[in-house]
Length: 449
Image (cartoon, rainbow, N blue to C red; front, top):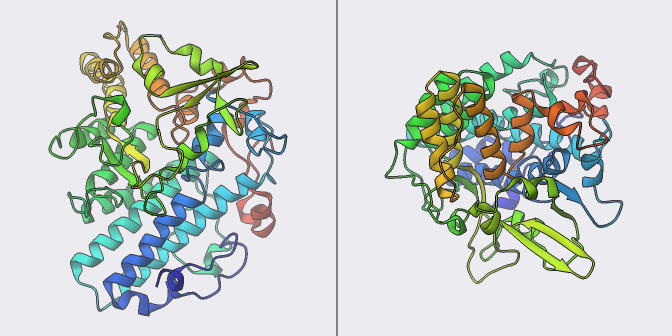
């Protein structure tokens, strides 16, 4: 059935007309099982390809190289080299892949939204669940595209003729569309998960995305409220005390994770980042990051592994502990977890003038890492302490470091001294050249390219 439901998409849905597929057939939406399978297929595509994949082409790796977390090893053909040296071009394959896979995933959920709306066979409860998840995905993918490429089109339908001539929208308008979609998703989704493994989003997954969106867009009141609504759900979410257990499948800190492809398979991040001997085959943690940790920080000893031989010392991310198959799966790829909500609320409270509340949330994360209370006092000191804490907490997780430096206006100050290839215009990726050639309405190209 899943084979029949695979979306036979081309490289980019704004390139050529999409061929007809089972996903666009109304028969898919005559039964909840087939409609749900179509949505499950979208999650598989998100896991395996594009921005959120845990493979070497995903943001966890490439933005880690782009900023100051990782450095590439292996052959000169390692695609991470161009990110590490900040020499990406409009023709760089991963740049086109993020754009194309992102908009194809958006096309897929738009097909589901349209099919569900037209269905006369699904119950209202089933429709709300499918539409809520699809709207959440649509908002999530647009959010990442916006923060990578700047002004982008917001695509809400599957009409090729309209999509082939779309124009880029100002970022504030894109944020408003994202917020509308994700708020609607939160209203439609249930509070409880449909499985213990939390591989399908619930209402609080949408709220976790909303809190991040509000933080990035400067709505600190909204960020504080949404983060609090999640942190207050102590029956669902508990900050995991043992750092070794944070990334396990059953962690109560997990808000949403992507299920592995097969029983016994573990996260793609573990397979990518872990290496047992030197030199590293693909990437290793940058010494700049390693040296930023205090020796008292448990994240330094629990989430980082040292590999040595006669020729050198290297470090790899050890958040995910499993590199290979195990009798049963132990780790999935986590997209949202509770620690982020504490640090979102801390930052929002600092921006709103609640310095004591900000430090309380910050200290919760610090205490788990074995650190004492922050000594920050002023607003500027607290915000800088939160930024630093996010660096230690979220390294090699979906580009948090790059996005944090970008939204705080510190990209140039931090990266110019440490990276020979960094330019101010590198804050945005280039629009893929093929897209500009196909649709001139997407012009002009981002500055610097």
